Image (cartoon, rainbow, N blue to C red; front, side, top):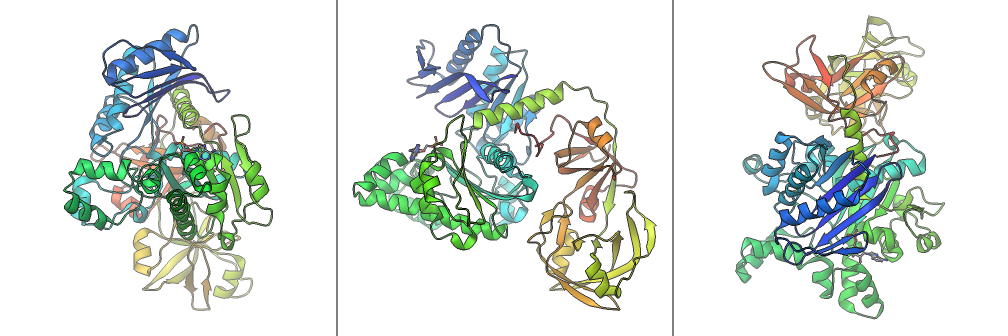
Length: 601
Ligand code: AMP
């Protein structure tokens, strides 16, 4: 497919036609210094513009120029980078009037970006009226962050009034890095804890636990987190009010100070360009040295914090202009992180040279536990591949069955060793009733869960036995028991908290195993083929209730020939959604999310 990818900034346009098979652009347009002094280049040729000096006219001109140069090549779809998708969009979507309105409404949260993105969308519709427009949101990948990571600790009424929360950005890049890491290491990302450090002029770091963003350093706006080219990153909010009082700054002046006069440029007093700062530092400039030290110190600090959040790291990735190209910066960041298993090989690090044919370098020392990679990110290609997926889905005929929804009450799965302690050596569980999934049963036997604060009695054991103990509870149970359990796919209990299990016969404190089950759909491979999904896809499910229609986002697909089609949610979700017995859901194909096995993501 040929996909036109449009990335409109406040003063620039980048529009590339990407061949999705080659994963390369065949036509590249860059326009800068907009709208007053446009400088437009198409594949290194400068284009002279004589029209009106307003943003919309220039975009239209750029798109017409691309159209005329495409000759016989037909564009299959247009992908737009949209910076802020707010709460509504956790996935790539086809742009209709509702999506356009939502992007417009979110302009408050991204005043520099969303209006420019919208201008790009409207111009594309005009210039290419017959072609579908797709929105790929910078914030979408981070929608999976748990509430505790999204929340700011401020007055909850203000939070509700203005929808203030941590949204995170650079999502397309972090997701691309996740997929490329899994592909390069030949490992399923569902088994990896990845730290993605996107270090460019804008910089952010993302903790990706088993395929999902669980923390990221940017927040409501792209100003939070790491120190950047011209942005301060984390700062004591007291400094802001102090300076506003002293300098009598308006809100715009304050924002400019934090956005444009800070970071590498502010501290060095020289430039926001890391290459120049490194050069000046090597020539003895103290301010340049300080800027580099603060920049790398803060990244190291975040790596430590995010390692704690994921209970360890398997892969550390550097990307973005600085992360991809500066061995010096990568070396400085990794210093002192050996205790986490992060050991960089200095020779490999120095000789790593990334380009389009050689986009990944493994720079880890063989003795380190963590794989350290430098990966060339390509947001334009990533957007094109996301767009292609939606276009392909749109072209499919919908012959999809409905999915029965079942509510799973709290329950435990036990290992042989634990049953031996709780019921006696070689004790066999007895069947109370079969479960809907073939071969599985609810046992007559129950256990008591003993947490830090409370205990819950008569919790059903499900058979057959499993290699690992697993206790599946709801968020409400978590609070009652006093346990902070992660949301996980069944079977992934690494690093989860433990709990005490008790019966009349015995008692055992398991070290790990308590999770809140990630809502999921069991399906047979035949169903998967019908739906056009694969094991570990993440999808949305619509419940078309007349009184209260709703969408379950972020639903995990689990495919096995032992499974029967059924979606499982926990009691909290069932209660909140008022799910009734016999209720059914519909897979939302147009909003289908990542295919975690798909090499093309
Ligand atoms: P990006 O925003 O991803 O294009 O990254 C831009 C940043 O990458 C700028 O600070 C550049 O100075 C920096 N950069 C590019 N190449 C190098 C390099 N070889 N060494 C250090 N920094 C670099």
